[in-house]
Image 1 (tube, rainbow, N blue to C red):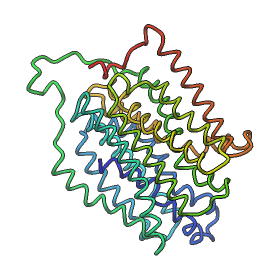
Image 2 (cartoon, one colour):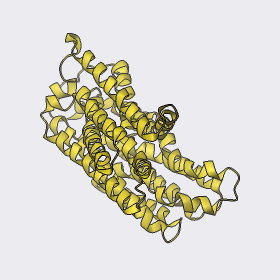
Image 3 (cartoon, helix red, strand yellow):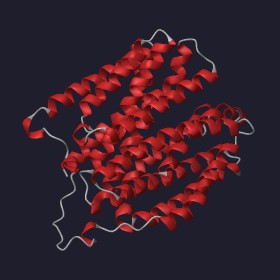
Image 4 (cartoon, rainbow, N blue to C red):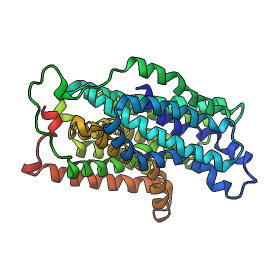
Amino acid sequence: MAGSCLPILGAVLLAPVLPRIQDHFADVPGSAALVPVMLTVPALSLALLAPFAGMIVDRLGRKRLLVAATVLYALFGTAPLWLDSLHAILVSRVLVGIAEAAIMTACTTLIGDYYDGELRDRYLALQAMCASVSATVFFVLGGALGAADWRAPFWLYAVGLALAPVMARVLPAPLPPERGADTTARAPRRAFPVRRMAGTCLLTVFGAVVFYTVPVEMAYLLDDLGTDSTGTIGAVTAGASAATVLGSVLFTRLAPHRRHRLPALFALCAAGFLLMGLADSLPLLVAGAVVNCVGTGLLLPSLVTRAMSLLEFADRGRGMGLWTAAFFLGEFLCPLVLLAGEEPAGSLASAVALLGVVTAALAAALFAVTRRPALAGPPEGVRR
């Protein structure tokens, strides 16, 4: 769980200090574009490289890669403490994204290795809960440390040096199922489920856009309503994170056959977007955000458990690398999608409402597909 929070740290830690970094590098040509990229480029490199990390996970082993990547994460993450070049800092941020790709892929794969069935679903939901809570915590810590100096938040990356030896000592090496004591015959290996993983990954890209819309755009939506108090923005953001955690808790409380009803989950997220887009007051905007975030808290563990159910031990790293790449690609695309929709829609709120309409249309399409007799029923992992 701690390892799964490290990529979230990279995504939100610098957000509060970007204006101060912008002021420091004001004389650097192109800094107006390069400084914001410092925040997003780890997610982009993570999305591009997670599939390759998945291949390495399957070949070299999950635990070994996780420990090594956590050490590199700390080294690359703290590098801006000593770098004076904006371009060199950007390179270090790319390297952080590479380490994050290995960490996130290995952590999710290990959850699939260690647990099965109901317990696996609970741990994957807990992973989503930890990510949501840590995002709020890291945002607050980044702002508090950044008040002293814009470089200070980078010290938090050193936590990797404390985590790596604990991981090496505590985490057991996973064993493939055929080596377990309960198995006497080796089952024939399935081919990698390319088509089903492709469909799940496409849904995950869109699901990640839905997941990150509230955290990324809420401050701008509040500002458009005339609310620019940092305290109010912080409180609303924290409330949205709490709603996401609530959704993840509800996921573990649902019966297994109800957890993977993606049409209903996307429909719930769409309802929240429509409320937000039509909101003309703060209470209605907050209500829409809460509805949406409860939906995303249910949606994220549903997508990852669905992907996990398609994979065997031998190709689980590759499969989860693809899923991780899809999720962080959606994170990177989220602000771009809203920006592209803002001009034709007329405002950010209208763009959010338009995203709600698209999400509702996807929910309807998924409902129509799942009603077909050949595709009815829960995914394979749920039947087990």
